[in-house]
Image (cartoon, rainbow, N blue to C red; front, side, top):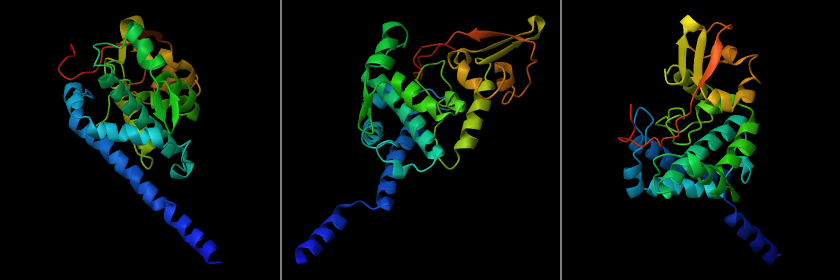
Length: 253
């Protein structure tokens, strides 16, 4: 009987209470928040040189991602919003880590793109996968097309990188905010009334099927967030995606 009691007490001592596990997730996000605050400017550009010299907070968050995910620890992520917030933050952090781990390339085009997104593997909750697989096999199936205004591969053509993590409690507000910001930038949306044409970021071409799950046309979707509505009879052209790395002080404007 004493042996049974002792074994029970030992197990109780080893099990990590949910509150403590939750606190560890908060600690990990605090590291990511510090990275965004210190190394990202208001335009969403990253000080990769400074980050490469002081990677401790980013490394701590990447290490957390390697151990914990909604798939490996589902109890920590009970809602769809908590899962999406985790995955968007994780994707952005892994992309950032990938840049400094790849010696800060000037561009992610050509063979660098294949290596960066396809060949390089990262541990996410104990499962190794590429950024391409992570986006297409895990994040997109969650079914919220607004993630395309939040996911950041650290290229100039990507959406702005916010200076704070995405959060489960405010996720809908945050994703709507990023959608409006993205479509408020002339680099992503340019109207040409004289030719009845609108030029959109190539992101709308890359992920057309996701946006068309929500609206009957791309223009109808854009009009949900654009400050000025686009007539439905406008023709669409796409602005070529810029794969230049979003490195502070090294971007031509």
